[in-house]
Length: 252
Image 1 (cartoon, rainbow, N blue to C red):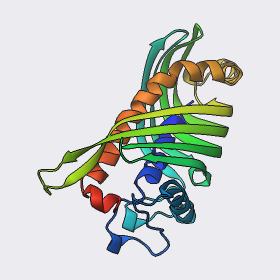
Image 2 (cartoon, rainbow, N blue to C red):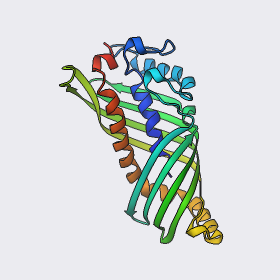
Image 3 (cartoon, one colour):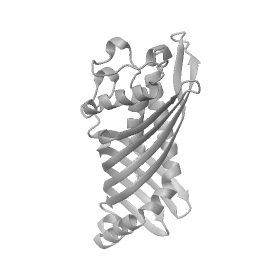
């Protein structure tokens, strides 16, 4: 249910990997130029060259260790249709993100847009959760450990940006204005510990119910997740982009 909020970090890495000064770029990174007629393929190759280094992080590119990927907190408040839930996830760890397969990259320089297609074989999530509400008219509440296993994930993401004149550098910079993501999860397995104050009978029944109905639950909370991703992604990436002029991020 919650993989969307972790995928955004890998999408950021993909869309911003060239955003450093040349002298700071590790030798294993292929540099791409925006006037390259094969820019999309160049970016794809560069991303693939980075993959082996993402597990331990790349300080020169300001990329932290990604195995596991640490996310401090995610909050979800949804009351649409059959799902009415308030939940908070903290101390989140995600495994498997660096195993992504980048299917395609499409960069639209004139319209400041990046479109990505990825495939993730498997993501495993562990976190502390706090939840209360109703799912398909079934009451749910608990506070404990959450575990999720998600497989065969197809991702289509569109990053929309704009150019602006920075007062700090007096040069043209880039910033993300919108982030759209469409997810197709092949299978999900979810387990929440300590539901209903540790009542094993109710807890086991609810976990079975969640796994039997994970597609319905995911479809209902997806808009809220995408809004959360958008705000986190824009804040995180724009801090990065604001440090470098556009000609440094993607040289002519």
